Length: 336
Image (cartoon, rainbow, N blue to C red; front, side):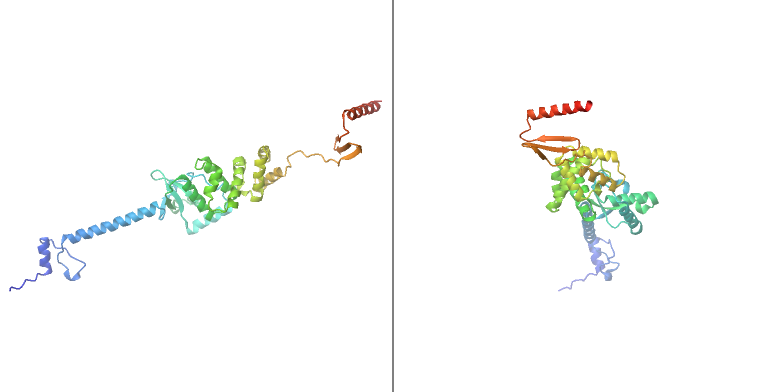
């Protein structure tokens, strides 16, 4: 029986490839030998598959808002949603500016992709404003971009809820500011009315808190165009103001007129005007009257400043005529 001839690795490669020799790193002892093209094809396919998997995961992470992206400031539309911040405290903004200047941006803003190369701001308005201010002041390239998470809200209500939830965690919003975003969202047609907006946007809040926010929507609807410092209105003033606006039809007119005349330049001055009108100090004071006194059977007399009134069962036409004749006689006597 003839012995089989054992082929060397190089011979195997030559038989399979027709002399197309490729070095292999997988087996160092085979250096300088050839391997089948199918190995290269398989390797390329595996690499391509891995690349596609990584690319797909990066795309999903980006679209699902799990990957932080650096975006140019001028591509962010900060007016995409009506903001719930009606003012920015100067001291708080300075703290944020100092932090960004020394440590850079630590927390990403949230945006939604709009047209090609443009994004609508969902949350992070103060961070965006601070970066723009720093870029204007310093012209440093590091302030020309903002770190952002690109969200993909399914609807406008989802976008508004995302903004509210982020601010509920990070920002100390007043009741007025919370109510204002509900009123504005309803005005934009995102919700049918402010009550529905409050219920949806602050679903996680306890019922008493939602009730207070809803009361403040009355203030926003009536006074937003007339107030300069609405975020400074505390709960203990805002709730009775809302109640007065609902119960007294003329209260809004008196408030707006008082604010126009006073033209307050500080939050304290504006609050003083609101408190004064709430106490009714703009109304004419009624003259103090003395207690009713019975001066005859069935006749009571009440005396106020410049006014005398008679009441009782015995106050009839005859008594009125007698009183009139007495007054005429007294007048005639005084003329003489």
